[in-house]
View 1 (cartoon, protein in one colour):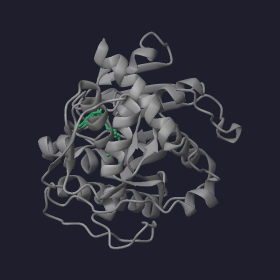
View 2: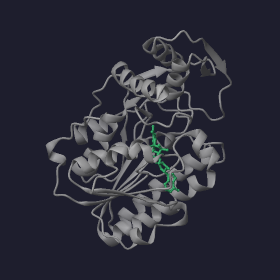
View 3: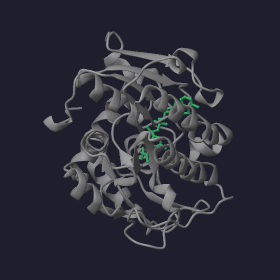
Length: 328
Ligand SMILES: NC(=O)c1ccc[n+]([C@@H]2O[C@H](COP(=O)([O-])OP(=O)(O)OC[C@H]3O[C@@H](n4cnc5c(N)ncnc54)[C@H](O)[C@@H]3O)[C@@H](O)[C@H]2O)c1
């Protein structure tokens, strides 16, 4: 990935802790941070991530990975460590992942967040938490601005994720307000690109895999529900700008407002792959959001961040990655 990081985000080399480093977003972020000259310690249990995602950093002296489940607390050496930046990305992130690992999802977003906030307070580190558009639930306001409080089922089949992320935001604000921890909260909207786990059901990769294998593309419901998809490169640049550019502590949406229906997405991917797969309908899963689209006015005004990779280009790059992976 060739990431254009604005010069204003460059700092002296720092000691950085990154949880979820072997995941989709974490591995791209790890590469970007090492590329900026930082020393990165990754922590990951590999529950939904893979070492293979970190292949480019395997022998890099500025990166190392500690394999550890944060649901069981921080590794001793991390708890005793000294960091200037802490990025907390560890969590199952797809409905398949968090429904399969419900208690871990709650613990890693709630208890591990508190443990990391305590560590940030002790180290005087700046801490970034990966929250989500799921905080808006099945939204009654469209597009979603950061000031919208959300429409979330607290006991539904996504609640272990949605409510844990909402708790994570509340905890982060409390440590900021009461204890002065220098925090950043990003609300991530659907992001796609190379290294998304191929079998976790996230819509872009599911359609790419089905198209490449000549299997039917499974659209849930009538396919009129919308998603707004951000290419990973834009997302990671937004994270780094949010971390480095402004002392802003309330949540910031980072995503691409380019909204598409799920059916249209299936058709586009099928066409870009050059596949003849048919499109078939499946039942809608419970609490599936009807509409998702970020209002990114805040990120534009605060950070001068805006996504630049259009959907067709991002999909082409993603398809090439999976074409090679499936052929290998
Ligand atoms: N990708 C998206 O579209 C998206 C959207 C909204 C929010 N997010 C958030 O961004 C973060 C990263 O998501 P991703 O898409 O890269 O998912 P991912 O599953 O690819 O990566 C998450 C990583 O966290 C690790 N992990 C999970 N539980 C852990 C635990 N208990 N201890 C240690 N490591 C653990 C996994 O092994 C994995 O490597 C998550 O917090 C997710 O909630 C992602």
